[in-house]
Length: 193
Image (cartoon, rainbow, N blue to C red; front, side, top):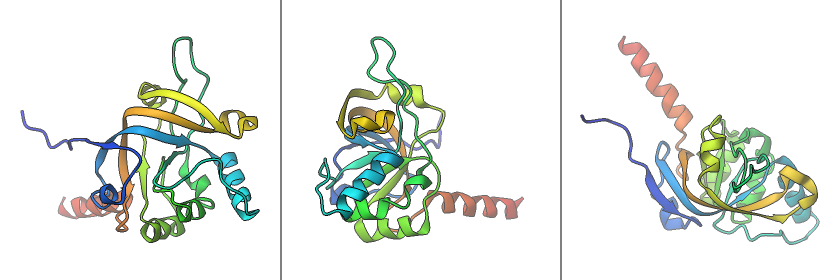
């Protein structure tokens, strides 16, 4: 039986410019390597550090940040549920971090026009993770360590090592937007009925 399901492409992190040039909205990916984890409070602290002329606790060049606040690990597990959080809450911070070299972000939901323009300018991508699939995503996380802002608890900045982490390219470096593509295809299909 033949299916039209896309074949997920394996990507080794960190992201290079050569890999970024091959990614397009709608591509299904399996990520392997290091991803940093941070939400609102960690992003705010990073921006405050930069505005004060300080150095970030991590080098963002070529890196990926996952917008997630993990739950505590159950016995024998690396991490609890690890589902994405709404990305719009990081929109105010993301352009500045891309200017520092950040090449990818993972979350759920749409991004602002300003963030999408910054992705084109700084050559970065936004990937969607499946909301509600935190337990599945957690099984892809092989190692976790807090690297900064431990006082923020679940919102501390973490470094995770992942294997075959599933994600979909939502926004690419060319301005492609999977949400726009989906709406357009829906309108075309609706007109054909």
